[in-house]
Amino acid sequence: MTDRADDADVESGVDAETAVDGADAEPAVGDAMDDRLRAAPIGVVETTSDGVVVDANDAAATLLETDRAALRGTAIEESFPKSAAGTLREAFEGASPDPASFEEYYPLIERWLAVDVRVGDGALVYVRDRTPRKDVEQTTDRLDQQLDRVQRINALVATVLQQVIGASDRSDVARTVCERLGGTDLYRFAWVGDREFPRERLRLLAAAGEADDLRERIEESLGGEKRLPGQTAVASGETRLVEAIAEDDTVPRGVRRSAFGGGLQSCLAVPLAYQGTIYGVVTVYSAREDGFSEQERVGLETLGSVAGFAIKAGRQEDLLVADTVTEVTVEARDETLPFVAAAREADRTLSLDGAVPRGDGAVVCYLAADGPVGEFDEALADHEAVADVRQIRSDEESLVQATVVGETPVTALAAWGATVRGGEYGSELARLVAEVPADGDVRRAVEAVDAAVEETRLVAKEEATRTPEPAEAFRDGLGERLTDRQRTVLRTAHLSDYFASPRGSTSAEVAETLDIAGSTMLYHLRRAEQKLVEAFFETDATSKATDSSDES
Image: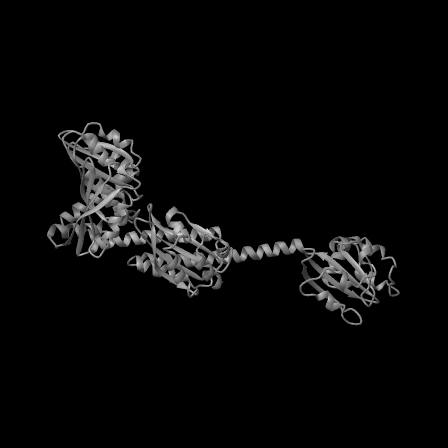
């Protein structure tokens, strides 16, 4: 008898050894079972030496989901439920049973049983239910596996994030994401789609993994009637999970068949988005039907946000360091645009003196007009694309500050990474001037505007070479010293007439415009002013340690 059986018998007050040793003769079929065995809390089945059941106690009958009378007189290997391994059958295959101790799962009764075969003149088979303990063990193992998987995925995502930040352009970002995610033991395939404005179209930019023909099937399906999960994610701006690709009729048939042939069962499509603009999508395939836990979704969505940021940052960096830029003039004809409606209300042409991206997708615009503009700010305030409006000056030369959100030409260009230099708004149309890198895709930038308005036209495109004039060199040098936050605060204060006398805006109003605390605004403004003065007087500011809080 094993220790487990002994422990159970001790707990129940029954000594299995005594019960076996106390049998003076081989029991005959129909003989009464020992009272101590019949009362035992564990299952006991008594057999002859050739495996015929003599009797069983109530506990055994309950565990085996039968009754004692049905067991008596039957061969134990026939009356006992069948397990996958069949260990009990093996124990009774010979002329006499062999001692055995094992745990097995019995599908017919959906239980794990611990079985001990004790041999004497006959045989005693002790049976105990191990299902609760096995459930706990399996749950623990499953949680351990999930934890290990999440930790490995987090490490993988962290590695990808580090490499994405250093990527030079969107193609580099796409290759990095695919190569690090696709073809691992965690994910079997990954592809990145680049968003083409304005029709929400995708083009496959990069792919990696073991499914040889899946890339071809995906490219074929991008122009088909049925949408891929990645296309749905771009259109909705939300993550799309397909738990069983082969059974999901919304997925194009060719992709389903190719995924099934490659052993891919589920996929997750995550938009590459930053500040409300979707630049593309990454779709990851798993060989498991439950291949994406909630923690994995969070990690991959973080990756999508960082990749979106990297794409936008790459465009802005190209513009900042480029020796040549492309200046484009775009005309947007849409009478519903907020500044067009305001110009019509005021019966004046509004000039866009400056536009400052606030960092959360909104853009603060400064509009000037010759002469008073009346109460047209009320018309702007009622427009859903305008977050707030404030008149800085209202006299012979009016100046209005307005923060725009949502889909407008200005926010579309800013989100795309272009720098809006100026423009005009009339009663029917808007004309904007923006800079994009010389090797940038002007058509795509124009289409970004076209996605936000009814009609867009490229009026002019001109390549410009930046000459290293002293003033330009001064600005470049100062730009390297200023943090992004300091530059934003300084430019917003300048455009708000904060430095004018009398002031057109107070520090509280500038802070409110940027949606930050007044003390925070003043801190960044003073640091920016200090660096501006140091640069002007050629003070060796670089010898001074920059406060780490500048980066906040």
